[in-house]
Image (cartoon, rainbow, N blue to C red; front, side, top):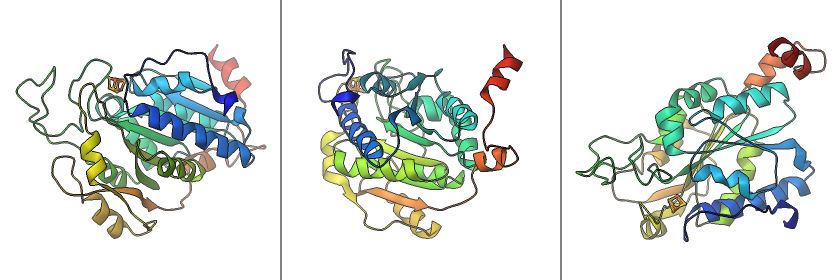
Length: 277
Ligand code: SF4
C-alpha cells in the first residue's frame, strides 16, 4: 500500500465520498498485484471533476482525458494494448450529460474496459449544477426553483445498451466496494460499476444512503431478475437501494473481434504513431 501513495495534496472536502472510493481502489490494486497483475499493466483514465482527481492520489499509470471523453480514450488504450487493464474514473455529469453517447456505444460493442462512476448526482467541482441523474426538485446553482427533469436510471440504461456487467456500490462500504471493483475489472467485456458517492458540500446524501442501501446476495444472470432489482430505486422516490452485481454475462468483446486477425494479437502502436505523426 505504501508504494501506491503519491505526493499530491488532496483537495477533496472533509467527509467527501471520494475518500472511500480511493480506499477501495487502493485495496483493489493491491489485490490485483498480489494475484499476479503487474502494476504497470493497470491504467486509470479519468474525466474532469472532483471524481477524477482520484488518479492523482494513487501511484498507478493514468491519463486525464477531456471532459466527457474518458471512455473513448480508454477504448483506444485498450485496443492499442489488449494486455492492459483499463479503468475509467468519471462522474455522472461528464458521462451522462457530455459523454452519454460514448457510454452507450462502448457498452453496446462490449469494449473490455471498466467504467467506475462516482455518482454524486450533480456537478460538484463547479459548485452544484444538476445533471442527468439529479433527482427531480433538486435545488442548486442552476436550478434555484428545483430541477424539473426526470433522471436516468443508470443500471437500466446500461442494461438497454447491452453492458455485460452491471453493478452498484457505495463509497461508505469500502470492503464491499472493493470486491465489486475486483469483479468488474476481472470481467472480460464492458463492466459498469455505479458508485453512490455523497457530496457533503452540495448534496449530502450520507444519512439517506446509510438508511436505505442494502446488499443483494445473488449474482443475477437473468435480465428479468436484474431489471427487477434495478427498478427498486428510480433516483427520485423512497424505498430501498440495492447494492451488488445486478447482471453479468460472458460475450465476445470488441478487442477480441478487432485483434483476431493480427499475428501477435496486438495492434502495433509504433505503426499507428508513424501514420499519425
Ligand atoms: Fe467531494 Fe463534493 Fe467536495 Fe467535490 S465538492 S470534493 S464531490 S464533497
